[in-house]
Amino acid sequence: MARADIDHVYHRCRKGLIDNLRLLKRLYDHLYTNGRPSRDGRLRLLGVSKAYDDDLYAYGVGRFPDEFDGLKIKHIETETMEGFERLHYYMQPVPEEVVREALEE
Image (cartoon, rainbow, N blue to C red; front, top):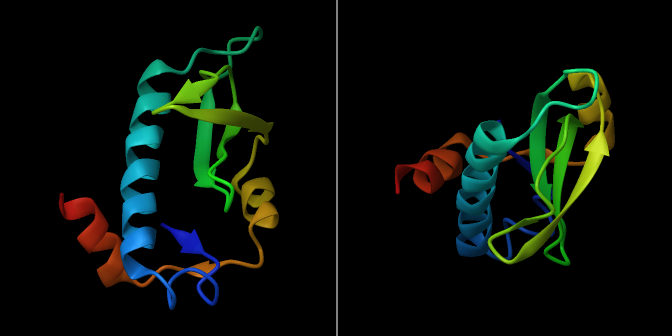
């Protein structure tokens, strides 16, 4: 699932949204593969996001790299999908055809 601030992003720059989705997919794959459990042995990656200022965010429990593709990663600890979704309540789902286009490459 992908969510975005559609009114500000999608309608103004479809290509930029697709580029961001591709970056976030690579980041998700990287974190899922290279994340390390926290001290208590937990590792759960619930999602990733990119802010308007190009900061990257990893949401979940565990230890994640500080950088990816030249961009800093900020970790926000959340253990549940509900907690993750509360942080993004204002965003709308990205149309399915846009997600498919982004993931084709």
